[in-house]
Length: 335
Image (cartoon, rainbow, N blue to C red; front, side, top):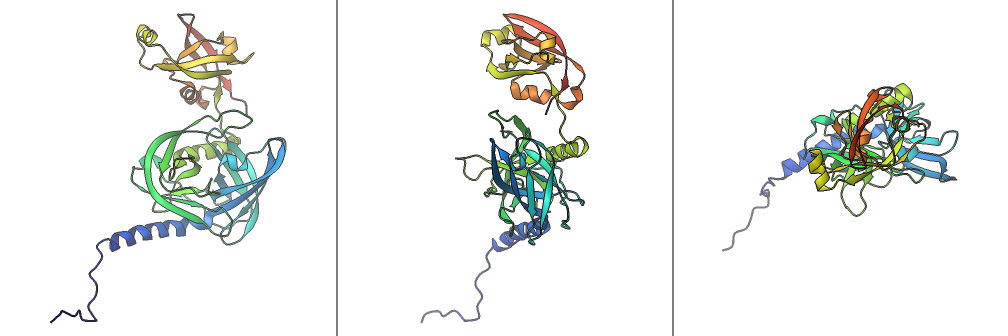
């Protein structure tokens, strides 16, 4: 006689159910905290000589209506300011005004007047671990937020920023890589941890690398936002030259007793700029700045911080096979 299972017998428990529920609940809790503060941004401004309309996301980070978004979302050309409208998930729509942007990190600060949504808090992105939960939140249409979840897959990445007017963007350092896919229109939205703390600002995907998303770290975003609120821009020092990263022949590396096998070769010197006044010339190979080895253009940019504005620096270059050291007084980089 066959065995008949009683009707009231429960199926065996699923050992993965508790883990799945805990993961789901973490994502749900994070979104509940974050979503009301994430707005859809509709931007009208002049780009490439024509009036154009774009969109993206942004989030509140102060109680008095200051928001962070991407520079490429609000960037415009010419005089005046872009026209920005911010729409929140509850349907409320407000005008927003550009406070300042920093294309070098693809970040911008705008202010929204009238919103009562809460401000989000920044977490310390230096404490992040690979494998940690990451939730990307955006508002591509203004009706409701969209959410993707994944993990931090890499820390400390570098990413080329958005360039304008035919110029390549500068290198953005301390970028987070995550497999939380970035939906169209979610640029400028927050990347948050399981507690709803902002760990990054979603900025880009890499075409052809499906599932990869990049975010400027929270610590970088907080620094840039603070500089914009204080000065209207991010201050950096300026040499007044154009250069490109180039390799150094092995025999020269050995002769110099140098570790790095790359440097920055100058191909243009701005007339009257600090480099010109110091006697730097097109063709010079920049090797060191205040004894810091220069490994390329992006490394040189990192050495030109605001703390060096108005200060003298010693630059060592290789010129026609000879080492030459010059002194330059750095000025503030024009905007």
